[in-house]
Length: 435
Image (cartoon, rainbow, N blue to C red):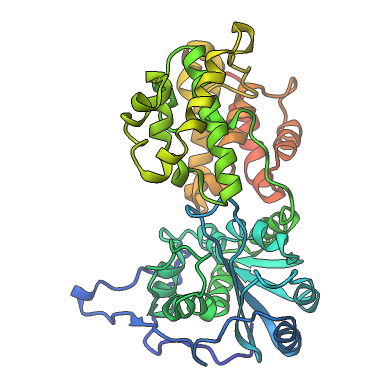
């Protein structure tokens, strides 16, 4: 718990005592209290920290604070090529709210060191941990309010929804998709960013109490520890990322697919040089259309939907060169379908291996029933991919121990194995025929 005066409504209903999470916020038409709009931070909107001297003062303030520290970061997804942090927000009892512009600073390692012993409170931590690690910040302990809400069985787990439901305040989210690389940042955006951490520790306390009431505190601790362990892990590099081009399923033949590949990598190079989101350089739909049409001159290329914009037209030679390179490839350099690691898509199991398909159906039924009995989503009880891999290639000797070891090898947590290993070990073998 924190020692900061909590910002709570007096009419917030008490939690129910029947094992379920708090009820949804009352419908305004039912006569219940409406959420109070939260429009300004308690101490006003701070100016972003932009210098080493200002950062040193913030480090001292945060070190002198107490209790958990609320942390958030704003990126420019959809606008920039990288996923770097363009603003970092923190709030701690005794220190207030701080906004930090990481662009003019080398890194935030001194701040990280000051918070080394503190619990960090984040919402949807997996979205921010990588960009925070990039500037030298990595939690040693954390509490993820979104994940906690999932484990507690809440249907709506967005920050605004939870703040409204549990604390009785409404947050506006209209700047969530803004271009946070903009400088200077508008005052309204800074207020929005500050409010994102205004209530995080209050929300953490409510959710921690709910998890404790449901007997799920230890489960959450395992999940949070796994997030901490992965905080600075580099993202997995996908083989042949061009194959994820939206609409590529319409492109038939290896030669046409080579044109998708060539245009994808040409676009990626331009996007990286410009630090612009690839889709803003050239949309996927244009890549697919050009791969199908195979234009050989600028006039034909620019007639294709998606190539008419001024910035795209200026790069016409780049796109035509990529298509020329694909056209000149020998047959043995064309794309080939790579063998898929792991099980095939579930919709193909029945034709590929009906016995495995039946195993998967039995395992899924176990997962769904167990999740319902413990009031949490099936995908948070166990990763669907783990279940598919187990059903496709079960251990040679099926026992609770071997099933548990297999699941742990995939990355399942101990609490998940404890709940599922015995039942899955019973479900994997084909049932004995009835007489």
